[in-house]
Structure formats: C-alpha cells, structure tokens
Amino acid sequence: MIGIIIGSIILLIILIAAIFMNLSPEFGGKHKETDIKRYQQSKHFKKGKFENLSETNMDMSFKETMATLVDYIKGVPNSKPDFELPVEKIDSTNWEQNDTTDRIFWFGHSAFLLKLDGKNILIDPMLGEVPAPHPLLGGKRYSSSLPIEIEKLPRIDVVLISHDHYDHLDYGTIQLLKDKTNQFMVPLGVGAHLRSWGIEENRIEEFDWWQELTYEHIQLAFTPSRHFSGRGLGDRFSTLWGSWVIKGKSKSLFFSGDSGYGDHFKRIGETYGPFDFAMMECGQYNEKWADIHMMPEESAQASADVKASKVMPIHWGAFTLSIHSWIDPVERFTKEANRLNLAHYVPKIGEEIKLSEIGTRFEQWWKK
Image 1 (cartoon, rainbow, N blue to C red):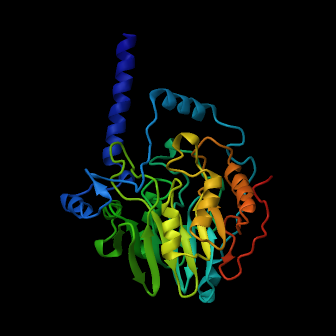
Image 2 (tube, helix red, strand yellow):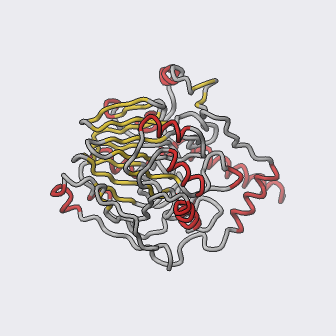
Image 3 (cartoon, helix red, strand yellow):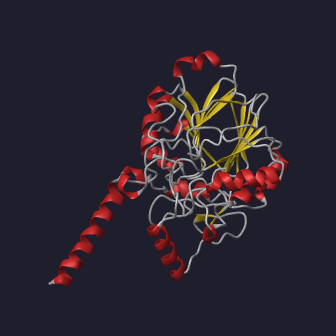
C-alpha cells in the first residue's frame, strides 16, 4: 500500500509537470518546419542544433551532478545580501528632456536601459522577480524594487536579447513591454518565443553571428559568445546565443551576454573595437561549468581582448544562480582589473552613467 501511494504521488507530480510545461506560455514557442529550414542556412546550425565556435564541454558525470546538487542544497556563506541594496530611482519625468545625453542604467544582473543618440534601447530586460518559469522554481531578486517600473518606462525603440534563458528573457517582462516597443532584435530561433507571446513578425529581427543591421543610424552587430540556450526539457541548443555590438554617432558599446572565455573576444575586438564601454559577464560561475561562464579573472581579460576603454562587471547583483558568495564576482573582478590596469566602474543599481563622463571611482556599495 505504501508503494502504491508513493508511486501515485510520483505519477501525479509527473502529470502536473507535463501539463504545466505544455500549457504554460513561459516555456516559449515551437519551431515550425520553415523555421528549421531557415536555421539550416546558418553555418553554426548542424544536426538540428546550434553549436559553439570552439569545443565546449557541458557534460557532468553522475557523481559530479549529485555533488553539485548537494552543494546547492547546502549553499554557501553570504550567498545573498543580508541588507537592503541601494537602488537609485530613474526619474521618468525628465527622461525626454535629456535626449542629447548618452547614458545607461543598470537594473542588476544583465539588464540595462540605454539612451543612445536619442533612442531608447533595453538590453536583456529580465525585470521580473524570479528568473524561472514559475515563482516556486527560483530565488527572488535581491532588491525589493526596480529603478523604474516597466509601466513608467519611456517608449522603447529596440529591445536586444542575447539568448533565451530565463534570467535574460522573461515572459512577464515581455508582456508588459510588447505594446511600448518598436522592434525586438533577437538571436536566431528566439523569434518563435516572441511570436507565441503575441508579438507581430514585422517587429522581430532574428540575427546570426556577425550579422549587422542599422537602426535609425545606430549600428548593431550580433557577435558570438560561448554558451548555450533552452527553456525546457529537450530544447537545449534549439536557439542561438551571443553578444551585441552597439555603435552610435560617437559612442561604441559591447554587451557580452553569457559566455565562457574564448578566442571570440579577440576577434570581436579586432573587428569592432575599440569600445568606449563594455558590459562583461562576471557571475554565476563554477569550475564545473567554466566553458560556459567565465571566472572573474577571465572576465577582466576578455574586457582587454575586446579593447574596452572602460568596463563594468555584470551578471551579478540581482539573483543567486550559482554556488559562490554574491559579492565574489565583483571582488575578484576589480582585483584582477586593477592588476591589468583596466579602467572599470561598478555603479549602483539605477545609477545614471553618462557615457561621456564615466569615471573610475565608485563606492563599494555591496559592502554592508
């Protein structure tokens, strides 16, 4: 009888999970046959999936998987802040009065609001509370509020997405943005998600690596990263992932997306550098998955590789997604950046960064 009860509970859990994954819109859209044929034209799409430029090992043995699971359950000291993070508020009433000022605001993790040459650009706007398909499946955002609520954001000209993981592409955020955004620029395959979420085809541009587009005189290029994609069971590598080059009239920026270290950074620097400002992934790493997330020391080196005049570490400061102290990324990055004599800046969440006036002095606001 006990065995029957346990078996029934397991079957019920499996049934609920299957129904949730098939009916919940958070998991995104399906790829049509015409989509697959379009992906096949990319030299980075082979045998039904996208591939990294260099060999990337994501396999873990059963022993390593179990050890990692135990590490997550045990946790680490200082895995999240034990105080309220300082968040500077963005004054939306003054936004349109400052059209001539190129500036950028960080929302924590990898989300940014950029004003460049009078255009409003959102980068990886995961502005939800939990980076998961359901609130029970992930940890909450550290800060209790955003610099500005989505409803108060100005009209957005372009949303740039680096890949389809939940901490970069959020269903709830897109629902609130879709009626106030002109264009969505996304990697190959990610358009299927947006179309299933009610965004018209003519507002979606899908990019392969090294593909370029000029939007209202702003030059955009989708460049490689070393990572992977997927939002559900069995769809890993089904969409592309990457980084973004953004060039205005006088300022040039680089956004790394998520990436392990590799030669692609030097190639990006040689092709599009130097950059006035780079936003470089630095956080949620582990030696077990070093091929897909850089160690902080590698993040600093990658910043030098792309020829960034100034750089800030990103992919930290909002969520706990790995097994390290929440301040470990910024502490290790700044130490290595100082060793490399690399100009860097670590703003508070919501702090205005004027691209013409980026300094190198900042408060260590992450310390209690």
